[in-house]
Image 1 (tube, helix red, strand yellow):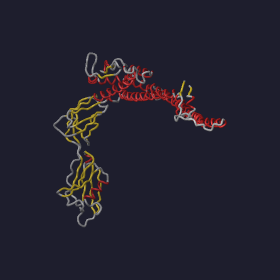
Image 2: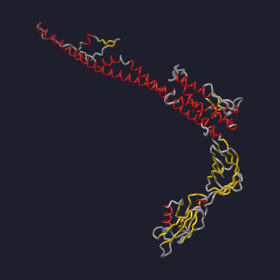
Image 3: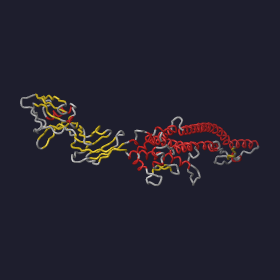
Length: 480
């Protein structure tokens, strides 16, 4: 590479455009910089895709782990009531499938006590001249706890101050002053249902008159003819693994309760797996698809890691076991492998292609066994083990690919920085060099005039005119 100038133009006194000349020289040395920066952009795009792929693999692993869990959604039980207005129910995985007849005779109620109305809530209820009194409040029925309330004039001898006093004790009782057209009354409400919430007055020597207690009774029901008493309208333990939520009493109605495998939970878990798997395969397929406009694959189209991953995943979803009532692979469960490697849940039964819903309805235990069967590893356990190695933060192939990408980006960044530093230093040197050249060229006409004038004087000619100048600096021409 060389730089050339028109010799005659250099002598016109305008010198050279130092900045343009230096930039032209440096431009010849920045070729690798553009190439490296483009490579860095490509690597950054690939890194983003690899990170997204790794995230999708993590989601896939979570969905597979859910299927592998022997106590997970495939083991879920549900409870269905024929009369939701009377009771609803939920079941744990430990619930035993079966049908039950339930009659709800009464609900558990909270205890309530209230006084006769007074003129207002801020006047003492003690008799004239009396300064003390005592009320014994019993909570929890005859075998419950009795709380002694000492009444002192000026402290808690109005129903307003007494309500505040009771609330401050944290006995599980809420005290309010209720005011209506008839006057003001002290009302006590238990915070518990059933007999534990029953309220009564054991003794009272004040001017307050309490009405008969209301509520504080247990729920009464029968389950398959067995009488059940519950302190709460949420009944647990009466049917193993099942919780009953009582909504209303209907002694003349028999509620049918069915307990069995939760097909909705199983379907949801399997669909989540299919969706997560298809997301991963979709990312891989897009990288291998050729764009007809550019005739190129995706940014990761030449990445061998994706080919290896694609092969591993295909092997995982074609896994099969023996026996298991014929449910030996995904296809037998109604989950088909498509030509593009994705999965689809079959919703229309055809010869040799059952629907997932039918399989779950007919043999839910075999579906769970296919995914979790420890004696043959099980589909989900096998898949989970493979995904664990694929997504391992140290040795997983995708993470190794990401690490390699980062190393390449770091190396390119170092090369770019080093080249930019060299160019900056060279720019300083060249600017100084060509500035000196420029100063010399700019002084040439003046020097020439002086020499010409001296020679003219020696020859007796004192009328030497200064040379004309061009005002445009020379930029030079770069040649390679």
